[in-house]
Picture 1 (cartoon, helix red, strand yellow):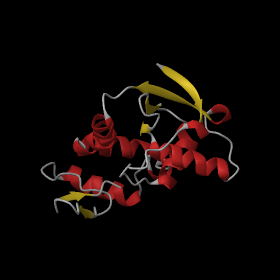
Picture 2 (cartoon, rainbow, N blue to C red):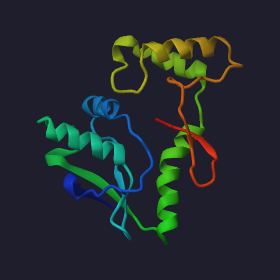
Picture 3 (cartoon, rainbow, N blue to C red):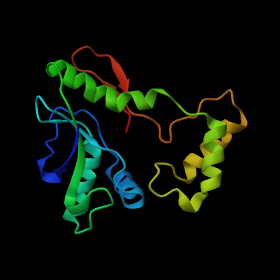
Picture 4 (tube, helix red, strand yellow):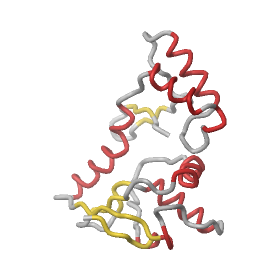
Amino acid sequence: MIRDVDLDALRADPENPKFHAVESIKASLRRFGLGAAFVIDDRTGLLVSGHGRREALLAMRTAGEEPPEGAEGWRVPVVFWRSRDPGEARAFLLAANRLTEEGGWDAPRLEAILDRLGEARLEGIGFDRHDLQTVRAAAADARLPVPAARPPRILTCPACTKTFPDAT
């Protein structure tokens, strides 16, 4: 079920481990509006998807900006999902952030879209001029994966010492 909810009623999960590119998210919201619903765990009342958009919207409102399209009166669409237990809620939170990172990009197709958009229309899409050059180089040699726009930081779990790439 989707309902419009006041922005102030969205409760961030205090254990959310994801960092967010808030300035990029704000630019995207200004350009495209709010095109995706937030997800709240109906069992806990906490966000499981949308922490970065929440943070960006709160910053925009604090700065005196008008709400973007889709967030009229600072009310936002929310999907209510119910976890079976706290572990499942955390797993969903991680999946919602991690799974989009795993797919990668088809460099030639990405290059074609970015070229059609042109450098002047990159605002709010998460790619910049440097990224465009990187994509062009990767598309020229389809054997190369598209490298990340910025070198990833490596995070180490203090409990198990396993390392993970930071997805910010």
